[in-house]
Amino acid sequence: MSDPRPALTRFRQHFAERIVPLWQGPGWNADLALPYEALDANHRPLPVQRYRAMACARQLYLFSSRIGQPGAAERAAALFRSLQKHFHDAEHGGWFYSIDADGKPLDRRKDLYTHAFIVFACAHYWGKVGEGLVEATLNAALEVITEQFARDDGLFEASLGEDWADLGSGPLQNPQMHLAEAFLQVLAVREDDEVQQALLQLCEALQEHFVEPQHGLMLEKPRGAVDNWFEPGHQFEWFYLLETSPLLRGTALHSSIERGFSYAEQHGVRDSAVLAMLDSDGTVLDATQRIWAQAEYLRALALRSGNEGKLAKQLQALESRFLHEGGWHECRDDAGAVSRHDMPSTTPYHLATCLEGLQGLS
Image (cartoon, rainbow, N blue to C red):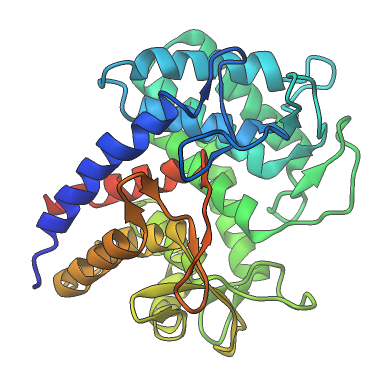
């Protein structure tokens, strides 16, 4: 079976009918106008420890990407308001990492990962609604990233204190990647020379400081750091971002990541399962299978010609191993047993971007 389209149609239908409604119904805290962090297998919210700004932003992306569907525009508007109401730091600027069950600031630090997703979601939402307040929020988020997180080497600090104090975190790969994704989303909805320049400098700095040169792998910590590793899911995610950008295609980073694709596939995909963590020599450090990594591999495969049979196989693997009547399995262990039974509110973002990347198949 080499035609991926029937399985893709089922995936798209499952997402629309089984997954998105979870976050319109049982996954929605109407009192705070926020998504619960996770639901259990019976669609009950897990006991509330926190709400994260990043999760709010990912859900803002989810519903703005479906803005023509019933209730989606209203939900996106509510999420945008909640992002400002609950997480914005009126004293120091930027957005808190999390609030507690009562809506009070909990982790008051400022982290790049959160701010990248706020830029990403607001850029996408503004592209749909064109509201001035949304663009103002987008601009404010870009400003704090430029003024507070930026380093002299073209990279960005991973985490800062509530008042922007240096915490010595240094740069980490994953926040830089989502910042690149956010910059690309800004450039998709408007011309912005400053963002374009920051994106190009970021990619140059990542090539210099994070890429393992032998295989072209994107490491999770700067090259030379102790106990470093790479994640095939992130390797595939980077490939998609770079390959789909006319601006970044042809850069040194694109060349490295393109070269690293086969190595990541050879060592990091086992029987259609994308493994979590590997050493750069190919040694498996963690064989956990995560649905987000499967989704990233799928949309990356769609960009590589002659892969219809592999795509069909991967879509079947996603369907049989991760999707079920009540939603999805978040993780399976190295033996294939379900190892997480909760469904986090952050995962639909990965499934939505995957489906967007697979649009060309149908």
